[in-house]
Length: 207
Image (cartoon, rainbow, N blue to C red; front, side, top):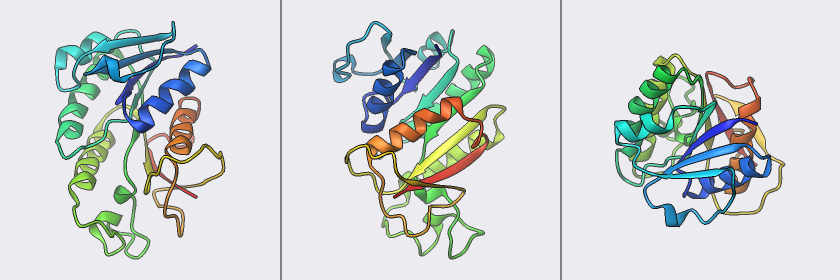
């Protein structure tokens, strides 16, 4: 049994990850601002009300943790980049080594111009680069940290069913990939708790 801390547990990907971890009878702690949004009852789930932007809240829950999974998203705010230094600092203090985060395909290398990232190239169709810039800053923070990090980078994320059949590629989005369901993304993120294959790297995921 692993002790898993899930951040962003009320989100689409995060809530799936919580369910998968509980199915395998791991101990799950979820730090959430609104506990009533997490509609899962399980004796192995510990819901803690708090905020990832509060250093004390992060430190309080980082004790007795084996793995951190962050499915935090940007929502037009700087929560992602403001919380990551607090998370990494707390992990180092408590000697928690493994963190898996959900990024965005925008921070993978561009196939057209491999020296730059997708969101910086003509490959990206998005008008706003705010979310990608936030994820890019987190990528920098993780790269400079002492942790064993993995960033799973999905492209367009419809709700969709779980298929278990998808393509992955280190540093790039699989060629021609245009979407990947929330369920398949969550399953791949979750599987990384037992895998060393993508430690200290980004991995693109798509059908």
